[in-house]
Amino acid sequence: MVSSADDPDPAFYENYVCGAQRNYTGYCNPEVDKLVDGQSMETDFEKRKRLVWAIERKLAEDDARPILFYPRAAYCRKPEFKGFVAMVNSIYNNSRFEDLWLDR
Image 1 (tube, rainbow, N blue to C red):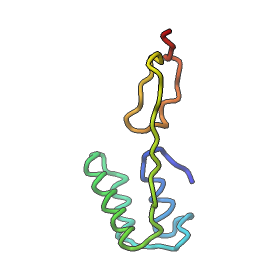
Image 2: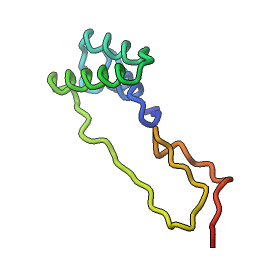
Image 3: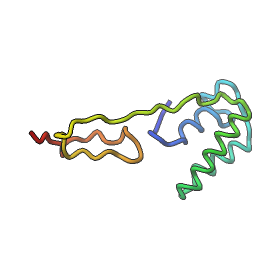
């Protein structure tokens, strides 16, 4: 599965739209497909979030191979670790460490 951290498009398009390659249950609902396309094109964050929630609610109501959990992760670091900026959109997007230093 191709994945983009914290973006619902890969999960929806690969697992739930009609005819998707990884749609192993054969779930097909043209209404959901339209919602998936709509959320993918939506540029307003809050509107897109509401659309994604509506899609997830519909998938749960239809009992279509539900997402059972979303993983959580966190950072732990010592106070002398300086220059680190945690990303707000994903914990997976900040693997550049050229500005980090230890203040000892």
